[in-house]
Image 1 (cartoon, rainbow, N blue to C red):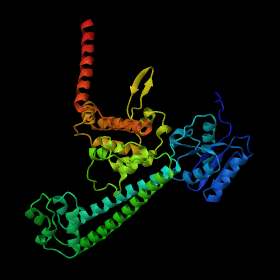
Image 2 (image 1 turned 90 degrees about the vertical axis):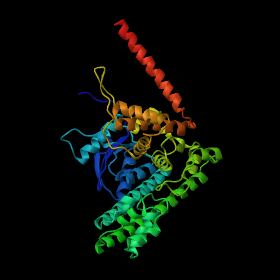
Image 3 (image 1 turned 180 degrees about the horizontal axis):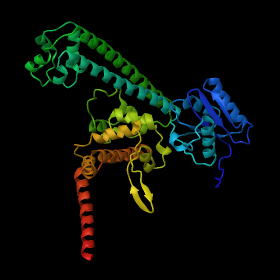
Length: 440
């Protein structure tokens, strides 16, 4: 039997669940080396006290749901080094599945130095992450209420949502409010139609001729009220996020106090999209990062805000851009056996919020006329749409990493220069292949 060397003799392992935490320490630290504790606050404090009595300095635990967070905070406050590890990385041997055995197994792996901690944001980043994720969920909830309004209209054969692009836009909102106020004559709705609507009056009138049903009108009113309430909650959440940014800028010495120049504002000035925050996200991000990350092709204010909330401002936690894109699961998972590459597929695991933001940004570059658009289309020809999205998202992530960590300005190459450069590389490769054929 091979014995693994002990590199961390003061290590403990904890198996986390909703109501019971199993804690394991080295067998020479206590007569009962594995103990079970409850999930209440006094139990968590008892865990920290027992670990201190056992002279433990480092603790490893599984990232089970959200149950680990209260214990993690208490252990950090008590001065312990805490490793939060992926549950897949500490899977026990088949047939030994108990809380006590899992805790003992985690402790053993940790003492041998075989565990790697997951990324844990600092307290300030955790606050922003909570607010931004809450805002995102509110937006998702609001879209569900819009879908329910569309269903209620469809069941009454009111097709206005098929005629206008946005049911919750200026025209759509005015028409819904008129319906809820009791209006039923199709022609009377025309006064609410904005001049920018492309559909003609006849088509709009036809779309508003239907079978008005009392129960569906009730559902329409209920869902519209809930939608309006969610919109107010979104505004409240955005106000809290802006307040957070103001406090960070006021209290942090390392924050860049310079504003975005007029030239830079003009270079990428656009109207805010429907779901963009109401406050100046771009200005706050520039003062925090020192560079304007929204200049990156495809990265909107919302995307940049979500990425900041998940990664924080200190990207040195990842040694280089390769480690960063690996953490994002935006690079191949190369499997080598016998000196040969047998697989290079991207790992099939759920994408995190950051990877989703980069992928969404990459997907929006399909028809763009800059060099990243050319790159996307070339990758799509090579491996399909999913392949192109991942490859382009990886490019965006690398650009973002270098800008934020090294304070490099975004300096894209000209599209024509990129095409000529790729053409030269292609010609050189073909000439090399031709020379090989001639020799053969």
